[in-house]
Length: 174
Image: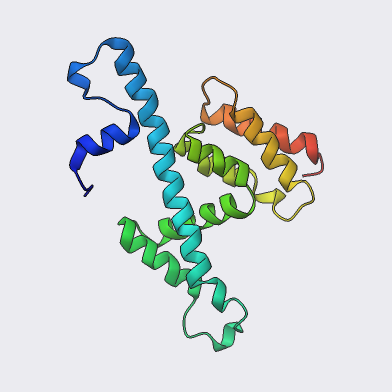
């Protein structure tokens, strides 16, 4: 799949072959692998959001009754085929990609930098759904990103509580 094979990917991520490494180097491999995984997930989200911009956005002004197909569904179907996932999975993925692009650009940047694990994105996006369109959205995005920059581990429950706290501090009515 990758041009040049495993060696080139390992070199680009700063990862060495495990069988020749000492314990500290193996731990560094694990750390860099998580960061590389986050970066690749950022590439997927960024590409999905750009695909939406090219496929869906030009048709948004067309009245629904005049459309032969739902452009969002078409975009998701293309993603589903490319990523070998279901239509529903692709629609959910596309929705998260748009949320990162439009609502959580600072969190998206941390994903690119490898500072937030890819598996936490769905939780962060879902917990911030209610702030979409509010006056506090940019501040909450920055607050969440600031918290995520801190060293330490993030469980699903800790992510949930942190995001909820950042929202409550800015907008207690939500």
